[in-house]
Image (cartoon, rainbow, N blue to C red):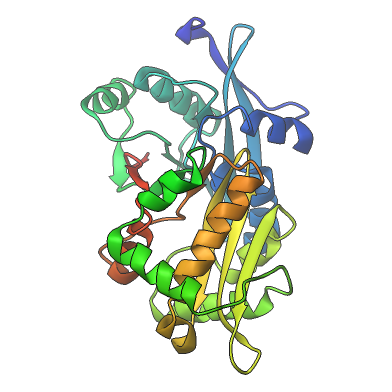
Length: 309
Protein backbone atom coordinates (compact mmCIF):
# COMPACT_ATOMS: atom_id res chain seq x y z
CA UNK A 1 0.00 0.00 0.00
CA UNK A 2 1.15 3.56 -0.70
CA UNK A 3 2.61 5.72 2.06
CA UNK A 4 -0.22 6.43 4.51
CA UNK A 5 1.23 9.86 5.33
CA UNK A 6 0.61 10.89 1.71
CA UNK A 7 -3.13 10.25 1.76
CA UNK A 8 -5.13 13.06 0.12
CA UNK A 9 -8.64 13.89 -1.15
CA UNK A 10 -9.22 14.82 -4.79
CA UNK A 11 -12.57 16.38 -5.65
CA UNK A 12 -11.86 18.02 -9.00
CA UNK A 13 -14.04 17.30 -12.05
CA UNK A 14 -15.64 14.04 -10.91
CA UNK A 15 -18.39 13.04 -13.33
CA UNK A 16 -21.33 10.68 -12.79
CA UNK A 17 -19.75 8.06 -15.07
CA UNK A 18 -16.45 8.32 -13.17
CA UNK A 19 -18.19 7.92 -9.83
CA UNK A 20 -20.25 4.97 -11.03
CA UNK A 21 -17.14 3.25 -12.39
CA UNK A 22 -15.30 3.73 -9.10
CA UNK A 23 -18.25 2.51 -7.04
CA UNK A 24 -18.22 -0.71 -9.05
CA UNK A 25 -14.66 -1.29 -7.81
CA UNK A 26 -15.79 -1.38 -4.16
CA UNK A 27 -16.13 -4.97 -2.83
CA UNK A 28 -19.40 -4.06 -1.06
CA UNK A 29 -21.02 -0.81 -2.12
CA UNK A 30 -23.88 0.93 -0.33
CA UNK A 31 -26.69 3.23 -1.41
CA UNK A 32 -25.53 6.20 0.68
CA UNK A 33 -22.35 6.51 -1.40
CA UNK A 34 -24.13 6.24 -4.77
CA UNK A 35 -24.17 9.26 -7.13
CA UNK A 36 -27.96 9.19 -7.48
CA UNK A 37 -28.42 9.16 -3.71
CA UNK A 38 -26.34 12.35 -3.56
CA UNK A 39 -28.49 14.00 -6.20
CA UNK A 40 -31.67 12.84 -4.46
CA UNK A 41 -30.41 14.37 -1.20
CA UNK A 42 -29.83 17.64 -3.05
CA UNK A 43 -33.30 17.63 -4.60
CA UNK A 44 -35.42 16.28 -1.74
CA UNK A 45 -33.53 17.34 1.40
CA UNK A 46 -31.57 20.40 0.29
CA UNK A 47 -28.27 18.73 1.20
CA UNK A 48 -25.47 19.37 -1.27
CA UNK A 49 -23.20 16.38 -2.04
CA UNK A 50 -19.42 16.62 -1.87
CA UNK A 51 -17.52 13.83 -3.63
CA UNK A 52 -13.82 12.99 -3.60
CA UNK A 53 -11.41 10.20 -4.47
CA UNK A 54 -8.93 9.11 -1.83
CA UNK A 55 -5.37 8.78 -3.11
CA UNK A 56 -1.95 8.07 -1.71
CA UNK A 57 0.82 9.03 -4.07
CA UNK A 58 -0.39 8.03 -7.52
CA UNK A 59 -2.56 5.22 -6.17
CA UNK A 60 -6.36 5.39 -5.90
CA UNK A 61 -7.45 3.87 -2.60
CA UNK A 62 -11.12 4.74 -2.26
CA UNK A 63 -13.93 7.29 -2.44
CA UNK A 64 -16.21 9.31 -0.21
CA UNK A 65 -19.48 11.21 -0.59
CA UNK A 66 -20.49 13.71 2.09
CA UNK A 67 -23.57 15.92 2.49
CA UNK A 68 -23.67 19.59 3.46
CA UNK A 69 -26.75 21.15 5.02
CA UNK A 70 -27.06 24.74 6.23
CA UNK A 71 -29.59 25.52 8.93
CA UNK A 72 -30.89 28.93 9.98
CA UNK A 73 -28.66 30.37 7.27
CA UNK A 74 -25.65 30.14 9.59
CA UNK A 75 -24.74 26.67 10.84
CA UNK A 76 -23.51 24.04 8.37
CA UNK A 77 -23.61 20.33 9.11
CA UNK A 78 -21.48 17.94 7.05
CA UNK A 79 -22.23 14.22 7.27
CA UNK A 80 -20.63 11.13 5.80
CA UNK A 81 -22.97 8.12 5.83
CA UNK A 82 -21.32 4.70 5.58
CA UNK A 83 -18.12 5.99 4.07
CA UNK A 84 -15.43 6.31 3.00
CA UNK A 85 -15.35 3.19 0.82
CA UNK A 86 -12.15 1.51 -0.32
CA UNK A 87 -11.33 -0.49 -3.44
CA UNK A 88 -9.65 -3.32 -1.55
CA UNK A 89 -9.51 -4.58 2.05
CA UNK A 90 -7.97 -1.75 4.05
CA UNK A 91 -6.68 -1.77 7.65
CA UNK A 92 -8.48 0.31 10.31
CA UNK A 93 -5.53 2.70 10.53
CA UNK A 94 -6.05 3.81 6.91
CA UNK A 95 -9.79 4.27 7.56
CA UNK A 96 -8.97 6.52 10.52
CA UNK A 97 -6.43 8.56 8.54
CA UNK A 98 -8.91 9.02 5.68
CA UNK A 99 -11.61 10.19 8.10
CA UNK A 100 -9.18 12.65 9.66
CA UNK A 101 -8.42 14.03 6.19
CA UNK A 102 -12.14 14.42 5.53
CA UNK A 103 -12.68 16.23 8.82
CA UNK A 104 -9.69 18.45 8.11
CA UNK A 105 -11.33 19.49 4.84
CA UNK A 106 -14.38 20.64 6.84
CA UNK A 107 -12.96 21.77 10.20
CA UNK A 108 -15.30 21.95 13.17
CA UNK A 109 -16.14 25.42 14.44
CA UNK A 110 -19.08 27.12 16.12
CA UNK A 111 -20.73 27.31 12.70
CA UNK A 112 -19.66 24.02 11.14
CA UNK A 113 -19.99 20.46 12.47
CA UNK A 114 -18.76 17.34 10.70
CA UNK A 115 -19.70 13.76 11.58
CA UNK A 116 -18.62 10.54 9.90
CA UNK A 117 -20.20 7.07 10.07
CA UNK A 118 -17.44 4.87 8.61
CA UNK A 119 -18.19 1.63 6.80
CA UNK A 120 -16.11 -0.46 9.18
CA UNK A 121 -17.16 -2.99 11.84
CA UNK A 122 -16.39 -2.50 15.53
CA UNK A 123 -13.15 -4.09 16.72
CA UNK A 124 -10.32 -3.47 19.16
CA UNK A 125 -8.06 -2.52 16.23
CA UNK A 126 -10.58 0.05 15.01
CA UNK A 127 -11.00 1.49 18.51
CA UNK A 128 -7.23 1.92 18.76
CA UNK A 129 -6.99 3.50 15.30
CA UNK A 130 -9.86 5.90 16.03
CA UNK A 131 -8.36 6.90 19.37
CA UNK A 132 -4.96 7.51 17.75
CA UNK A 133 -6.60 10.07 15.44
CA UNK A 134 -8.75 11.63 18.20
CA UNK A 135 -12.01 10.43 16.64
CA UNK A 136 -14.77 10.53 19.24
CA UNK A 137 -17.79 8.23 18.98
CA UNK A 138 -21.04 10.14 19.56
CA UNK A 139 -23.70 7.69 18.32
CA UNK A 140 -24.19 4.03 17.53
CA UNK A 141 -23.63 2.94 13.95
CA UNK A 142 -25.85 1.45 11.28
CA UNK A 143 -26.98 -2.18 11.46
CA UNK A 144 -28.10 -4.31 8.55
CA UNK A 145 -27.37 -7.62 6.84
CA UNK A 146 -25.74 -8.64 3.56
CA UNK A 147 -26.88 -11.43 1.25
CA UNK A 148 -24.23 -12.82 -1.10
CA UNK A 149 -25.95 -13.22 -4.48
CA UNK A 150 -22.90 -14.81 -6.12
CA UNK A 151 -23.95 -18.11 -4.54
CA UNK A 152 -26.06 -20.59 -6.48
CA UNK A 153 -29.84 -20.21 -6.20
CA UNK A 154 -30.11 -23.62 -4.52
CA UNK A 155 -27.60 -22.54 -1.88
CA UNK A 156 -29.48 -19.28 -1.25
CA UNK A 157 -32.75 -21.15 -0.83
CA UNK A 158 -31.18 -23.68 1.51
CA UNK A 159 -29.91 -20.76 3.61
CA UNK A 160 -33.44 -19.47 4.31
CA UNK A 161 -34.65 -19.99 7.87
CA UNK A 162 -37.09 -22.91 8.02
CA UNK A 163 -40.20 -20.89 8.88
CA UNK A 164 -39.37 -18.31 6.18
CA UNK A 165 -38.87 -21.07 3.60
CA UNK A 166 -42.13 -22.75 4.59
CA UNK A 167 -43.99 -19.47 4.12
CA UNK A 168 -42.36 -19.07 0.70
CA UNK A 169 -43.51 -22.55 -0.32
CA UNK A 170 -47.07 -21.67 0.74
CA UNK A 171 -46.96 -18.41 -1.27
CA UNK A 172 -45.64 -20.24 -4.35
CA UNK A 173 -48.47 -22.78 -4.06
CA UNK A 174 -51.10 -20.01 -3.86
CA UNK A 175 -50.75 -19.16 -7.55
CA UNK A 176 -49.92 -15.49 -6.95
CA UNK A 177 -48.91 -13.29 -9.89
CA UNK A 178 -45.75 -11.20 -9.52
CA UNK A 179 -45.75 -8.05 -11.66
CA UNK A 180 -42.66 -5.97 -12.43
CA UNK A 181 -42.57 -2.20 -12.95
CA UNK A 182 -45.45 0.26 -13.00
CA UNK A 183 -46.12 3.44 -11.04
CA UNK A 184 -44.55 3.18 -7.55
CA UNK A 185 -46.63 6.03 -6.11
CA UNK A 186 -48.96 3.73 -4.17
CA UNK A 187 -46.00 1.91 -2.58
CA UNK A 188 -44.29 5.15 -1.55
CA UNK A 189 -47.54 6.44 -0.02
CA UNK A 190 -47.97 3.21 1.96
CA UNK A 191 -44.31 3.32 3.03
CA UNK A 192 -44.53 6.93 4.22
CA UNK A 193 -47.69 6.21 6.25
CA UNK A 194 -45.96 3.21 7.85
CA UNK A 195 -42.82 5.26 8.49
CA UNK A 196 -44.83 7.91 10.34
CA UNK A 197 -46.87 5.39 12.32
CA UNK A 198 -43.81 3.46 13.49
CA UNK A 199 -41.61 6.56 13.81
CA UNK A 200 -39.11 4.94 11.51
CA UNK A 201 -36.03 7.11 10.89
CA UNK A 202 -35.36 5.79 7.38
CA UNK A 203 -35.33 7.86 4.17
CA UNK A 204 -38.52 9.77 3.42
CA UNK A 205 -40.81 8.80 0.55
CA UNK A 206 -39.87 12.12 -1.04
CA UNK A 207 -36.19 11.14 -1.02
CA UNK A 208 -36.90 7.64 -2.36
CA UNK A 209 -39.09 9.15 -5.07
CA UNK A 210 -36.17 11.30 -6.18
CA UNK A 211 -34.04 8.14 -6.30
CA UNK A 212 -36.25 6.48 -8.90
CA UNK A 213 -34.04 7.90 -11.64
CA UNK A 214 -31.47 5.30 -10.60
CA UNK A 215 -31.66 1.59 -11.43
CA UNK A 216 -34.63 0.20 -9.55
CA UNK A 217 -36.61 -3.03 -9.43
CA UNK A 218 -40.28 -2.71 -8.44
CA UNK A 219 -42.28 -5.89 -7.85
CA UNK A 220 -45.90 -6.19 -6.73
CA UNK A 221 -48.73 -8.72 -6.42
CA UNK A 222 -52.30 -7.68 -7.31
CA UNK A 223 -55.11 -8.58 -4.92
CA UNK A 224 -58.63 -9.79 -5.57
CA UNK A 225 -59.86 -6.26 -6.37
CA UNK A 226 -56.91 -5.50 -8.65
CA UNK A 227 -55.16 -3.21 -6.14
CA UNK A 228 -51.72 -4.35 -4.97
CA UNK A 229 -51.69 -6.58 -1.89
CA UNK A 230 -47.91 -6.23 -1.50
CA UNK A 231 -44.92 -4.52 -3.08
CA UNK A 232 -41.14 -4.23 -2.81
CA UNK A 233 -38.58 -1.82 -4.23
CA UNK A 234 -34.89 -2.55 -4.72
CA UNK A 235 -32.33 0.11 -5.72
CA UNK A 236 -29.07 -0.80 -7.45
CA UNK A 237 -25.70 0.84 -6.75
CA UNK A 238 -22.29 -0.18 -7.99
CA UNK A 239 -22.46 -3.95 -8.50
CA UNK A 240 -24.87 -4.39 -5.60
CA UNK A 241 -28.41 -3.45 -4.53
CA UNK A 242 -30.42 -2.43 -1.46
CA UNK A 243 -33.84 -3.69 -0.39
CA UNK A 244 -35.29 -0.23 0.23
CA UNK A 245 -39.09 -0.43 0.54
CA UNK A 246 -41.51 -3.20 1.37
CA UNK A 247 -45.22 -3.14 2.20
CA UNK A 248 -47.88 -5.83 2.63
CA UNK A 249 -51.58 -5.42 3.43
CA UNK A 250 -53.79 -7.85 5.32
CA UNK A 251 -54.66 -9.79 2.17
CA UNK A 252 -50.97 -10.15 1.34
CA UNK A 253 -49.99 -11.21 4.85
CA UNK A 254 -52.60 -13.98 4.77
CA UNK A 255 -50.81 -15.62 1.80
CA UNK A 256 -47.19 -14.69 2.67
CA UNK A 257 -46.97 -12.43 -0.39
CA UNK A 258 -43.93 -10.58 0.92
CA UNK A 259 -41.87 -13.75 1.11
CA UNK A 260 -42.59 -14.44 -2.55
CA UNK A 261 -41.75 -10.87 -3.62
CA UNK A 262 -38.44 -10.85 -1.80
CA UNK A 263 -37.44 -14.22 -3.19
CA UNK A 264 -38.43 -13.18 -6.72
CA UNK A 265 -36.45 -9.97 -6.28
CA UNK A 266 -33.38 -11.92 -5.20
CA UNK A 267 -33.62 -14.19 -8.24
CA UNK A 268 -34.11 -11.30 -10.67
CA UNK A 269 -31.29 -9.22 -9.21
CA UNK A 270 -29.02 -12.26 -9.35
CA UNK A 271 -29.92 -12.83 -13.02
CA UNK A 272 -28.97 -9.19 -13.71
CA UNK A 273 -25.49 -9.79 -12.34
CA UNK A 274 -26.03 -8.07 -8.98
CA UNK A 275 -23.37 -9.33 -6.59
CA UNK A 276 -24.83 -8.61 -3.14
CA UNK A 277 -28.01 -7.37 -1.45
CA UNK A 278 -28.01 -4.98 1.50
CA UNK A 279 -31.16 -5.58 3.54
CA UNK A 280 -31.62 -1.82 4.04
CA UNK A 281 -31.18 -1.57 7.80
CA UNK A 282 -32.23 -3.82 10.68
CA UNK A 283 -33.48 -2.42 13.99
CA UNK A 284 -34.42 -5.29 16.30
CA UNK A 285 -35.26 -2.90 19.15
CA UNK A 286 -37.67 -0.50 17.42
CA UNK A 287 -39.00 -2.80 14.67
CA UNK A 288 -38.57 -6.39 15.89
CA UNK A 289 -41.12 -7.83 13.45
CA UNK A 290 -39.42 -6.40 10.37
CA UNK A 291 -36.00 -7.36 11.74
CA UNK A 292 -37.15 -10.94 12.29
CA UNK A 293 -38.55 -11.11 8.76
CA UNK A 294 -35.36 -9.81 7.16
CA UNK A 295 -33.20 -12.11 9.25
CA UNK A 296 -35.20 -15.03 7.86
CA UNK A 297 -33.26 -14.72 4.61
CA UNK A 298 -30.12 -15.98 6.34
CA UNK A 299 -28.06 -12.92 5.37
CA UNK A 300 -24.78 -12.03 7.10
CA UNK A 301 -25.34 -9.40 9.82
CA UNK A 302 -23.05 -6.36 9.86
CA UNK A 303 -22.70 -3.34 12.11
CA UNK A 304 -20.93 -0.03 11.46
CA UNK A 305 -18.74 0.92 14.42
CA UNK A 306 -20.45 4.25 15.15
CA UNK A 307 -20.78 7.92 14.28
CA UNK A 308 -17.65 9.96 14.96
CA UNK A 309 -17.07 13.62 15.65
